[in-house]
Image 1 (cartoon, helix red, strand yellow):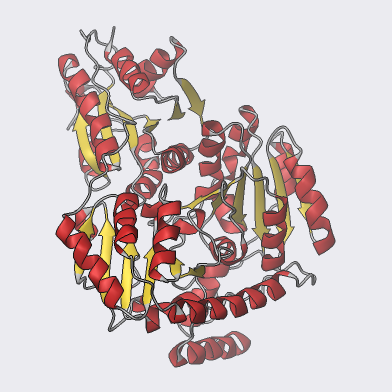
Image 2 (spheres, one colour):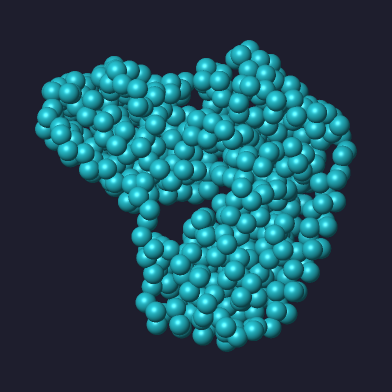
Length: 555
């Protein structure tokens, strides 16, 4: 057994099913070790960044360790964006990189990069294997670190080490074991229950940390008579059509969520690290529930922190709330949400030409099967899915939450479709984001992945335009010259269709979902469609007007 064989054996013990990457001279022994066994497959991508995104999406959706590889120098560098996506969304990913031979490290050899320095910030564990005997322990620790810390681990293997023999008999896999149900002190739970009972207007801010605790979250909200405001990543936990959910928060949220945060006198944060401080209440008391101790008090001053698993804490609090509460605040917020839903539904019913993005999102929601997995890209696609895509119970929704990088959705869909071959994966992309890594469309074709990709084609970097105008700057530099995306899909060996009229959307979606391989819809959408923030300050309004004047007069 050589070092590369030991690596593959360790990965198999950790239930890794595939490795994403591109072969290269510094990792040839690694890819050869994969070739010589049948437990783990190699998914060859066209860009290492796409491989890292695929691994990140796999880890986010499964909670299990995912793996990507890159050769020395440029291959390793290309992994970084996808790895930062995994880091900031707390996804367990192991990156294996090749390195020049040990005798050339530090000599400015061809393709030599200081990989330990390069990966120092992104990784919770970051080592170079310098001797074969060291390899099994380093690789095991890397897997353990990625799983335990829900982050990125990196191991660099010089090209003259990977093929050397090593004795390796004992494998100590970690996970995907069930996490312990860590709970706070009983006195703290009792104090939280007293605070909730004493408050008149309780609101809940729920994040992705509530994943797996949907029922407990709803039961607690009902007992506390508290509306649930969700983060964007928690859209797959509870979406806007549930009667106790009053929508999202932040620039991509809605007015009801902002109003609840402004008016509550007690905020209960559950599994969220929501970073936008302007949306937190200014005078309310705050209880924060999080499994990560360092998150307590990081975003807002906290009156009581409860460290532990969301489901068990919410259950304990629900059981402690045995006195009926006045539900007036909840009813007021639900009435506000009903008005917001009416406005949303009206926007979605607008079947004008060019196609309005809300109308498209409603059509996708209606066409998607009950087991669909949605991946949203960064940009206006994020905003339209946040407000208008319906995520039903049993469906999944993910995106690049912390990093908010473009190009995640389609590459991530490759990982999602491989991890869940019996589910339909739908990537919703902007034209700018899709074009960044559209070369990997051939990867989906190669492996026969029936991903449905919906490209919102407005020939603009639309979200950048909005950001410019919000600052009072003219729209400049955001125009795109796009190819015929449907023709690109067909040229790659997939199925593609251009959609330019509202009455074409439904039939095109049905046809795309019926394909056995990758299908792409190039949807020509209204470039002037506005994404209005839930609240607009006077300075924002003035800046927007100023920007429009400057665009007209070219100044």
